[in-house]
Amino acid sequence: MKAKDLPKCPVETTLTLLNSKWKFIIIRELLTGTKRFLELKKAVGKITQKVLTTNLREMEEKGLVERKVYAQIPPKVEYTLTDIGYSLAVVLDGMAEWGTAYKEFLKILEKQEKKRNKKEVV
Image (cartoon, rainbow, N blue to C red; front, side, top):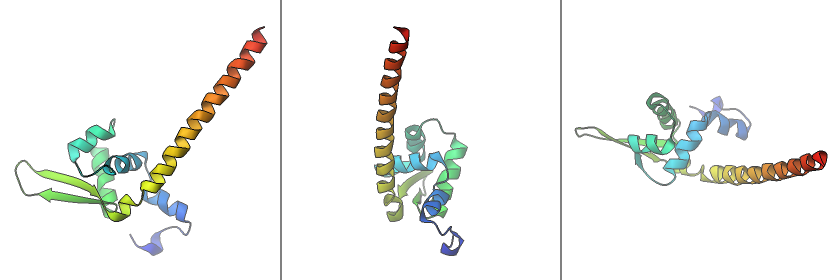
């Protein structure tokens, strides 16, 4: 991928690189350190092997993930975030903070809705 091929808007650039929910979750898991494929699959959760493989390959092509293959039987492959991949930690931290605040917002709305429903019943 070349810089000239990316959108002018930096937000669009980020979304172009991380164009699936799985990439965010993969990054979240790799922020804790290097993982083998099956470790990563287990940590990510409900993801098929094909989807995980596709996402990891795309992330490797974009320079976010490094794949290390060990010449042994059975084959051993490890995935690690590159420096630019690790730099996405601040993005995920911001998303986590926003997600937490949004959940609290919904709880407040639910409480207000319950109060309104109680007043209507009385």
